[in-house]
Length: 247
View 1 (cartoon, one colour):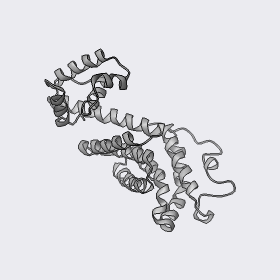
View 2 (cartoon, rainbow, N blue to C red):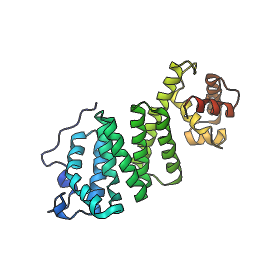
View 3 (tube, one colour):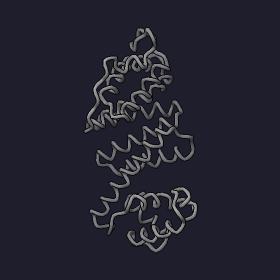
View 4 (tube, rainbow, N blue to C red):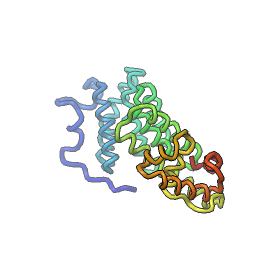
């Protein structure tokens, strides 16, 4: 578990609530209150400032609940708050609570049509599902997240969160395959990166350009991949990788 930093004497509250206002229902919740509070919570978690994130979430809870009651679908702007709450629960090992919060946050993100928030939520969901031992479901979340990310412009935070989750869960799948003796040798991170691109139509030269490596380096990695997967072709390598849960 990560060590949270101490909250400053002024705390994060003053940095996100409206001047002279408060986060309670009596202040008249606004979409800006919810958006700023949610995004701030996500960034605080990113900075390992769990206690500060918890404080913001606590202060915003009444506002979010009031919005859910008063606005209906308009409360979708609270999606980042729900996702941050789910992430905080995950970091504390409260996986079932995290799962429920993330599912609600994802529903709101769908309504709000916010691609970056949706991708962050799906990546968080993948980590929770992996933690609960459901690797296929975790991979489904990442596949959906990648589909959205490939079609829509992403914030830097969303792109980083997705890439990190893909690396963690892809690596876990490799370890499981090696442990079950269905994969004779563990794949490297670079081999995994190339493997994820093989199901598409990109040529070896295009794969190299995407990963900033030469075509000869791609060819060398492909030979290593085929050997480790006991595959004789790109199509066979993809089929084997899917069977093993690597992609």
